[in-house]
Amino acid sequence: MLDWLIVGGGIHGTHLALYLTQRRRVPLDRLRILDPYPEPLALWEHHTANVGMTYLRSGHAHNLHYDPFSLITFARTQAGQPLAEFLEPYGRPSLALFRAHSQQLIQQYKLNSIRLMGRASGLSRIPGGWRVETETGSIESAQVALAFGLTEQPAWPTVFAGMRGAAGVQHIFDPAFDRAALQDWSQAVVVGGGITAAQTALSLALRQPGTVTLVMRHPPRLHQFDADPGWVGMTLGEFYADADYARRRAVIQRARHRGSMPPDVARELQTAVQHGLLHLVEAEVNAVNRTTTDLHAPLRLEARHSGWSLVADTLILATGLDPRRPGGAWLDAAIDQFGLPLAPDGYPIVDQRLAWAEGLHVSGPLAELEIGPVARNIIGARLAADRIGTGL
Ligand SMILES: Cc1cc2nc3c(=O)[nH]c(=O)nc-3n(C[C@H](O)[C@H](O)[C@H](O)COP(=O)(O)OP(=O)(O)OC[C@H]3O[C@@H](n4cnc5c(N)ncnc54)[C@H](O)[C@@H]3O)c2cc1C
Image (tube, rainbow, N blue to C red):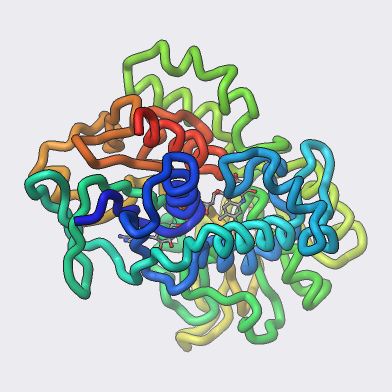
């Protein structure tokens, strides 16, 4: 039996493994990371490349290490220096630097060697721990950490829900989406209102200037971060003081600036529009149909209340992630079987060490009601690891 099994090997799972093995001295051979991808951070790499972002939204102190200065130190090394580019304010690192730093940590701490490829599909209690089922067998561990989030759950607004899998229609967060493999288009439309939509539209516009329209249902909402920095610590007193989980959820919803973008991305957008690279339309699409009965015919998007419409042969949704509790049927079954406590919103009620039950921990959105509005971000992984490792 292992000491630790971490389910999910993205930003959260990889950070937790680094923290437990380096900071809490859990021996490397007593811990494993279960993840469906062959390489660590695969989905993060996939999403960030598809979006076409070149800088992170968060500052350099939010990195894969538990030491906030780790990335800035790496930026001074021979390997990091050529990639050492930062955007102010908050010294937001280039994606290339963040990536190189993460890879250096993975190599240095041998985090690749402890990965098991597979997907958790069942969870049961055994004496002294838990058994996690996968498609290729089961793994037993005294402690299990569920460290996956929403990143496999693209949100499809109702008006587009019937178009999943339809020709020319894709979601930027579909694990199978590949922006580089998109065929040339006559007219592309990106639908969405936040940083991802803006960056996706900008990258498409650079490839085929003048042929891309970004449709936003509200004017750009400017916020430097998706949750203000106070939520990393200072403002949390108010959050912890309230034991009512419905109110905690309401605080999280108010604190997270959904569909927002930092001012520099809004400026880039504006410049691209001024130079005719990109068209920007403020409309709420409420109808989408093929122009003929041919399943490959162009699509007509309409905002019927304003009379706006546009015909496009490529439609990319950048409408965010579905906020429903991640995990799916196997986790639902475990919740029922072991009576794992849930808040009214269906999310876990966990203790201060983020334990949902003895030996069963959570990180990421599953820890949101305890960590607060930044739980799903990079800094949320650090806050969660600190809690999970308390007392080890
Ligand atoms: C484009 C983009 C840019 C972002 N930029 C920033 C930023 O600048 N700063 C910031 O703080 N945050 C940012 N975020 C938010 C957040 O930090 C990232 O989404 C981050 O990847 C979340 O980490 P994660 O571990 O939850 O998810 P991931 O990194 O996606 O990893 C989750 C892993 O769990 C695996 N998994 C899922 N289910 C199972 C299962 N049943 N069994 C085994 N494995 C499973 C998945 O396949 C995946 O490999 C960004 C998000 C996106 C999408």
